[in-house]
Image 1 (cartoon, helix red, strand yellow):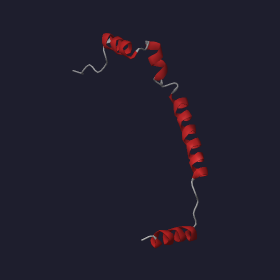
Image 2: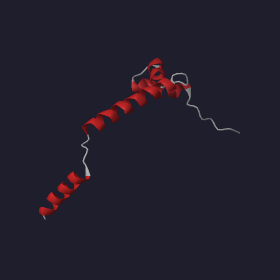
Image 3: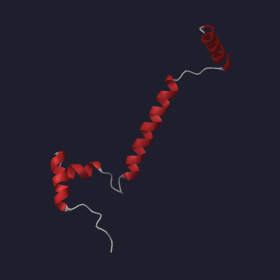
Length: 77
């Protein structure tokens, strides 16, 4: 005997009302199986953009620079 796993219509309506949303607004926020690939693709592009920004801002240190900075820190002791 399978358990009931879906929300009742009344509970759904109450939850939507409490959230101040219509069923259409809620449906627009939940990706359907048809739109999921575009949703994932959009997120993928955001992460690529973020990665590029991070690369541009991250300092690139060679070993000599790292050694110099470590020596500077050691002098402070």
